[in-house]
Image (cartoon, rainbow, N blue to C red; front, side):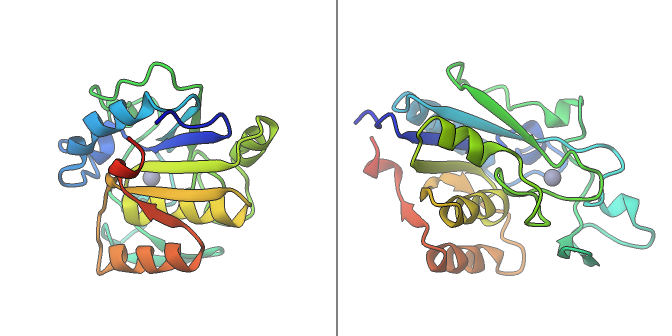
Length: 208
Ligand code: ZN
């Protein structure tokens, strides 16, 4: 079924850095790419997101003396998980995975480029104040429904989906076209948060 003009597919962070061989590899994340490529053919509107950090980014454990990856710190906007250095601007790690094949995508939203703020969500940076501009872009194009796929279910996908809902879009996550990091139960927590936030969990078979 071809999706209506007021729908958009948002493909989150299908990059070398988050797939096997990358600096923040999510196990099996490359396996969802063929489904995403196929799914994109059902959408007139497709937006890609790309995690895009400067080397001195606040989310990198290496930039905090004595801290290790996957520990947390407190920042002015709340708790921040520290990650391995990943998706540095202009590096191969930050490029889209070579198997991602969506030439029809109309917009690439780069996020996480402010050194002092992380940005899991495609809509709002992690301070919940700094907008990426995506909501305005979608509204100006009269898009009402968002369908979200990609990496990682429990971080960038979940935050994108919850922001979409909060900003007034009908928000869906296509669960079997996502892959999770699942850090200390974060996947279960993310699904609870998404459900509480009005996000609909659907499957590929509900679209095709
Ligand atoms: Zn990142």
